[in-house]
Image (spheres, rainbow, N blue to C red):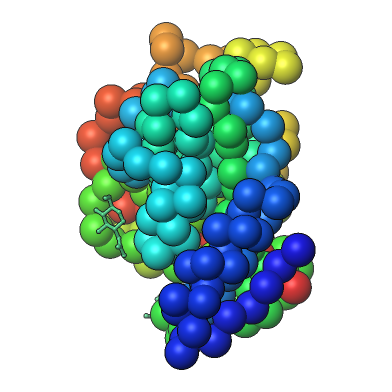
Length: 256
Ligand SMILES: *[C@@H]1O[C@H](CO)[C@@H](O)[C@H](O)[C@H]1NC(C)=O
Ligand SMILES: *[C@@H]1O[C@H](CO)[C@@H](O)[C@H](O)[C@H]1NC(C)=O
């Protein structure tokens, strides 16, 4: 199903890719390396603008091409009746983001098929053997969802840090000069609880200290994500994912 086309065959590719697309759920990788193919996984789209990179009106083929050309695009939804093309800034099949999809038979949902990374992106990242992940603390200040979108762009499975062990906690605390967002958010389903962004139930590392002292004692107000203050092993606190202040963040990237 997947045809690989050299950079000198763009015109041929445009023709082939169209055939390829019409005949099944995959589209060829065109000429741009590492961007992967697209898989049709169902019928749904987003109404939550946090997850939308761009919306344009165009045919299905161009919609996929637009996503393929943008490294920040991880999935897309295309409406064949209206030609609405919605590019997604997050992988829509992944944990937290899946539950925000709105089922709609008009919208075909396609997910970019990415390969796991085999090395850390560059020397700015620190590898932890016990978790098989690379970590980096980023100083630019971003909102929770913008920080998560940024972490997604470093590679397959990239997220805000999702610490469950004290060793992972050390990665979060390292270089933590202004506090940081973590990849832990509240979800009402399947059970009201804090979950990692990849969909697993959150496990608090034993060394975590909570703001005001003591242990985790349930959800506060409507605060739906977890951040830390600055310093070495600083307390964690609950914060607003959608409308909170911009903070630094630590990204993680799994390595195979
Ligand atoms: C991806 O799309 C967004 C939204 O249109 C745009 O701001 C960004 O610059 C694009 N990135 C690349 C690498 O083209
Ligand atoms: C912390 O900073 C040091 C020195 O710049 C760097 O080597 C290390 O990778 C950084 N750790 C993280 C998790 O960003």
